[in-house]
Amino acid sequence: MKKNILILLVIISFCSSCKKEINPFLISKHNIGHLTDSTQVKELESVFINDSIVKYVSGDEFTGNINDIEIYEKGGAPLLVLSPSQSLDSTATIRTVRVVDPRFATAKGLSQTSTFKDITNNYKISNIQNSLRNIIISVNEINAYFTIDKKELPANMRFDMNLKIEAIQIPEEAKINGFYLYWRD
Image 1 (cartoon, rainbow, N blue to C red):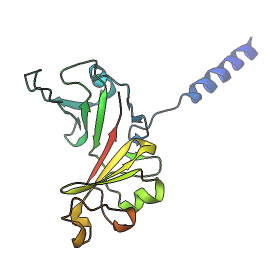
Image 2: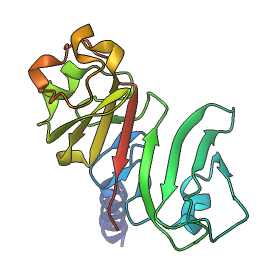
Image 3: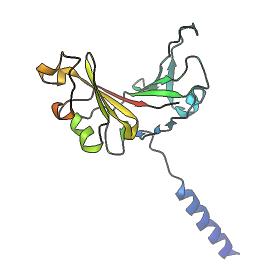
Image 4: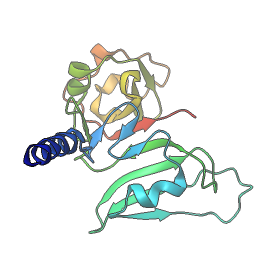
């Protein structure tokens, strides 16, 4: 009898140790902490149970505007900004996540406070786009894109929106000013 109890205790402890705890600040291709690419808006209360959720509702479901949802720590520090795939639809999934808190990072350490060198050292750049005030760097490997202010670029590259910018032209110390995850429906 004592032997059976001992075996049962060993099995229970083994099974409980197999349960993998999710890092609430880990960014991967299909999730950021407990939030996944299939999480619906109505599930956000249970995903961010210890945080505050702020939903902006325009009041006119015919405008077609997507209403961002902001996630804050209970102390008031901003964590994330979520954009659902459909406005005013509780079954909509999250399409875009803007990372605000620097504690959120990929397994390779890339976060909101990283530099262009950190991106190139850890991931393959899929695309670089030139916009009015920023350059947009896409990394398909993690479904992410990063913005870098054009003020970080050499002066001769800041004002020409038609200029094709290559990775080698971007200074390694250029700071990320926006970190976004994008998930398709």
